[in-house]
Length: 566
Image (cartoon, rainbow, N blue to C red):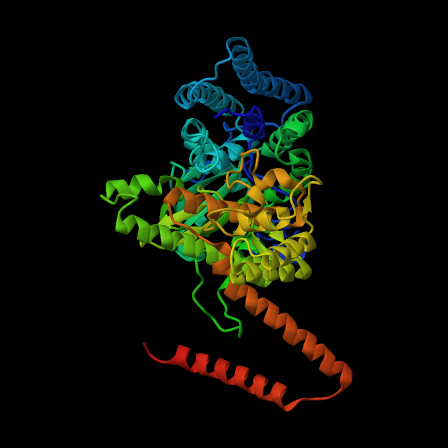
């Protein structure tokens, strides 16, 4: 049981599943309707105390060039020794084996590498604690992947999933005042309550609970406030990770250098809360209506932005009462619910079902979806519902990609077995159609194995002799020559759900769960093609008229039921 030095390359690159290009609406027209009136933002540069500005609060300035260089030097001086320690330990073991002719037992190797992991995890946690910034995001992802990373790492980095280096409330109020107050308006004109302690503090923003005045609806809200001058720090961190991933490009299971290049382009949209508010509304509208356009219950609770209280750096939205998924197990234990108990398993299935439904509908039906899923962004609400927050990273994929993905789901769901040659060829051909490129020396089952590994966590044995473990030398990931950047974030969503199912001990097939939506997408595309053909021919068929009347009747019936007294 030898641990490859490649493992730490992945850890220090800090992504278990790569990010990629992200779409977020940047159109000024839709965003302006949500935000504050332009030209009326007060020039407040400090906080509000009892209705007065406290000029003692100073905004942190952007990093200077020298500070960016110092930060890069600190990163390299911390990251390289961790990586090199694994290479050194591996070489040491090989030398001992060559001289003595004896290899360590499985138990001895397990103890040795556990100690190495513990040491590396402590150093990595110390580095992230010191640097903060983008590295906090990477720690959150590692902590969520108990199925991939050793427990020494996931436990050491678990503290980064919630509150990270919270800013003083005076500075937070100063940002809110600068961004939201119009001329002649006081802080108390918007908020009757504003909690000093944050609900959460992350790399980009900090969130506080507050209560709006009657003028703005008198409701409980969450106020998301961007950290001052954070943009230059995070973009510098990405540059460091690009350099590191390029240095160890040949030792990593995926081309993380390309991934970080794409992420560098994507991250800029996360600093625009106007775009985030538009994305929140767009996703809500998509999942709160059925295929006939009638209102329906969303599969998950989504917050909505408060009209008129959104700016580029402040976002006021609905408050979701609950705890992040990262603390759900702890809360369940407080209530006497063991994770392996029937109640715990029931909750686990409900969680997987909710996440599978929201991502399946968004990815396959509209192509526009939440692209930053991790346990800090998934909430378990007080009533047991599941909530999803933080829409700073979203992604739009095209209709052709959605159609091919839908075909992959149907093919996986309808396969006769995991070894049937005809099924493997169909699945593999569809994976290649998506843009997946397989290494030249990979077995012919490689494309199908990648699709099964990504979208069917219930499979026991992958075809082609591949292992299910992501860091295994025989992992399907190693067979990947390249993965289409347009679909990397789809993969990230599937990996999140796959990791949760593994942690919960619940076999889960995304392909099986997504297949109904996939069939609807394919059927809809078929109907559209028929409609185009009819339009071109100029003929109207009776069955098309009957189908249209049936759809109209269902819609009328749904509206009648909705108007009935409860």
